[in-house]
Structure formats: C-alpha cells, structure tokens
Image 1 (cartoon, one colour):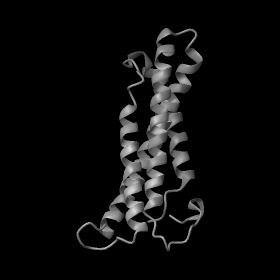
Image 2 (spheres, helix red, strand yellow):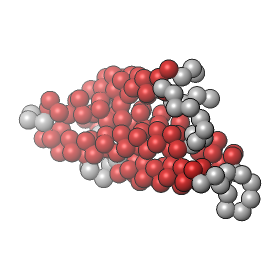
Image 3 (cartoon, one colour):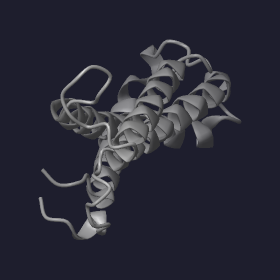
Image 4 (tube, one colour):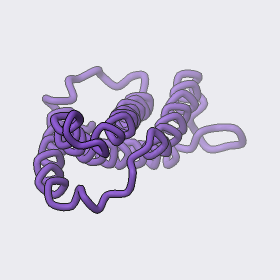
Length: 158
C-alpha cells in the first residue's frame, strides 16, 4: 500500500464536481437551506484526524513503537494509515460536491435570493472538506517510519 497520490485525490475532486454540478442543476430547487453549520462536522473530523496525526508522530519519533503498555502497536499505525487514506478520499469527494454547489450558486447570487443565502454555507462546508483532506494527508505522513526515505507521493506506484 503506497501513499495517497495528490493527483488521484484531485481527479476525485474534479470528477465529483462535474457530476455534482449536473445533479445540482436538476435538484437544487429541493435543497434544504445550506447554513454555515452544514459542513462543520467535517471540521470536527479534520481536527480529530490531525490530532491523531500528532499523537502518532510523537510516539513514532520517540521510538515507542512496540507491544506493551503505553506504546503504539504497529497494527495501530497500519490502521491509522487506512483511516488517513479513507478520510482523504471522503474529503476529496465531499470537496468536489461543495465545489459543484458553489459553481451553481455563485453566478446566481444576484438573481436568486436563496443562492445568495446558500453561498456562505457552501464556502464553509468546502473549506471544512479541504481541512479534512489536509488532516488526512498529515496523518498519513505522520505514520511514516523515521527511517523511511522521503519520496514524492506522485511518483509512488499503486
């Protein structure tokens, strides 16, 4: 299992944004109001993932990997990598969705009152999704062994 490639995440953002925009054009009239609180749960998840990254990084750097009380089990690091990869993909897809919503509401703010009201909520949700992607990539980076060579994630296979 290699590191998550940024170009793959970017492709997921773009693909979701394109498909999402087509969907938003059809179903926007039935959307509930998009408030600034709409995407804040993603920010909570991003904070948790980033905090987890700091914890893993500190334990790996201190050499506390191994079995025993207060130590980080190697399987816990592997599970952390899986959580990081999943969070990065989820954040990318959700970011693409909110970019699609923004692409729809921004040009219509002056003519459609509800689009003007939904813009701030979509911006906050998009930023929170971006924060989740960044936190997930941080956690993945923190799970690297100190002896592991720093390689370009875009050049890695898989």
